[in-house]
Length: 185
Image 1 (spheres, rainbow, N blue to C red):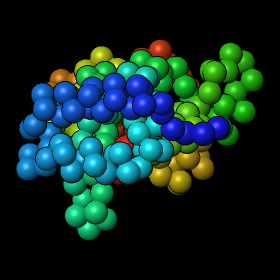
Image 2: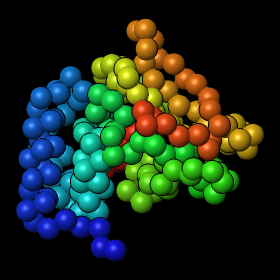
Image 3: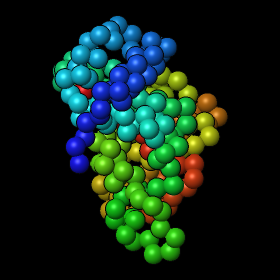
Image 4: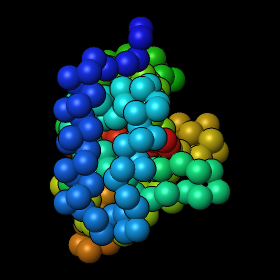
């Protein structure tokens, strides 16, 4: 499958991203949209991924520039976990192990198909510094291998003015739990 957008899709996406960028300058102080757009236009597959993030209601936005790697970093910045990525168990192993009422897919599989990485705990904490996210939903995050080997997976949310990190069986899934992605451009 060719992961590129037609010109009209590209223009619409770039306008959406630019508008979001300008409305949320506190997320990326000191960054200029023109430099970001130039980078995006040079990497069509990244635009395709951002379109996937947008299509699943993730509302991707630039959250920082990593000078060491020379990349702009986008996170899903929707107030709640993206609607188009909920009701997923954690990974393929959990999906295959679930015999009764399996979900349609797993968070890790969908992330890979989209071309994003699931947020780590550190990235989720960074996101929460930019606003209050997941006040009603929760978000699967990248789970350390030691926890995953024991059958668990971790997720986060923000309640009572506090960020919580929880655990669950990796095969669990809920209508209010999805995942957030990150993308380096």
